[in-house]
Length: 326
Ligand code: SF4
Image (cartoon, rainbow, N blue to C red; front, side):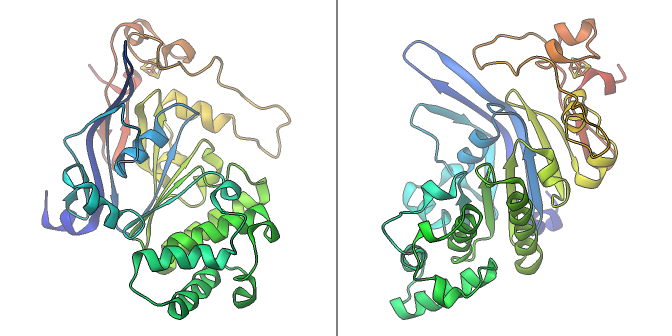
């Protein structure tokens, strides 16, 4: 690893494999996933439900259930392999250095306490400050996420906020500890379309103004198209395509990525394109390329041999036999 890369790379995951064990079987859910995130960049991880994107990120925070079998060469965060940390040391990373923003803001806030109490609790847990100072920091965090009149609204309860405003409160809670990295797992799923776009804009503002690195997990490519610096498309536990966002959106290569992009609503078309078929379940044993039962370009080799992610110039990686010259 070069000196520059060491300085700039905030998170680096190398050859991550995850399986879940039960009494009678072991089911693989993530296979050979590697990626890195540079300081101050926004990475979008996209894929249908069950493709392994959320599990991948929960493994970074080591928040998977006990029956998860996680194997990786390393998961380096700021030069420290998270896999080697004790639970006690991990606690100082979670919340302080890496903040997690969950899917549903409404169920993530306690309806019995004011939003201020909940943000202050997080601040006092992670920083050695008294209540008065914590309140000032909480008001500042609410201001950073564009909540109007934060010094008044800090004393309101979650039911007095809309869904989008509740998500802003959750983001304020995450920001209050000045994390280096925010991981947001489907952060706008429970919100309507207009509010989704506003929350995405807020993430971009946070990245640009505060230099925070962000990973956004979503099933919706349109949502990250305006904000991501890097894109990873996952399918059935593996990376199908990985590229800088401008390269990806101008020249998507993998047939699955193309299908996802074609299925986005367009103003001048009244019919939506769909990717035929369903994503495989983790119990399905599919030979070769896991996308081949749904792929309109599949040929004999696709059914027999699994492609691997290969990178061309410009950091554009694709896992598809159509792009292998041998
Ligand atoms: Fe389609 Fe074959 Fe490429 Fe898989 S390897 S995406 S089946 S063309």
